[in-house]
Length: 172
Image (cartoon, rainbow, N blue to C red; front, top):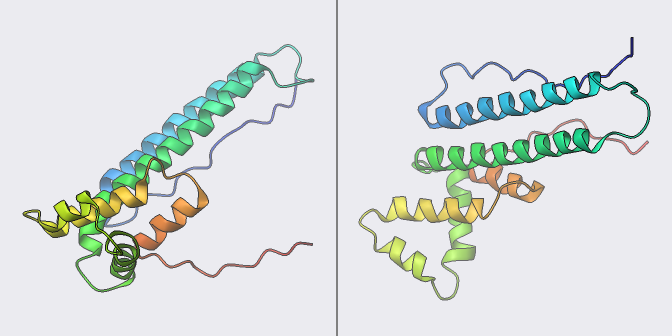
C-alpha cells in the first residue's frame, strides 16, 4: 500500500456568533467556495490514489485539478470580498472611524482631485448621492478582480480593519 499524502483544506471556523446581516451573504460565498475547492481536492486525491505508480512526475490531469482549485479559490475570495464590501460599507461608513477615514482619503486623492469624472458627477447629483458614492468606491476597490496582496490590503483598509501586529518572521 502506498503512502499517499492527501491534499485537504483545513475546516472553516464556525460562523461568527451573532453574525451581522451585512456579513451573511459573504459568509455563504466563503462556505460555498470552501466546499467547491474541497471537492476538487477530493477528486485530485481519488485520481492520485488510482494511479498504478505514485513515483515520477505529476500527471497533466493532476496539475489541471490543482490549477482549477487555485482558480476557484481566487474567484471565491473575489466574490466574497466584493459582497462584503457592497453589503457592509453602507453601515461602516455611517459613523466616523477607520473605514470612513479610508473612504474620505480615497475620494480626496482619486475622485475629487482635479477634474471629476462623469461617473463622479453623476453620483454627486444622484437622488441618493451617499449610496451612489459608496457604489463608486466599491467599484474602485474591486476593480476587475480582488486577488493580489495590494487588493486585499485595500479591502482590509476600506473595511476599517487594522493590521494586527504578529510575530515577526526571521530570515534565519
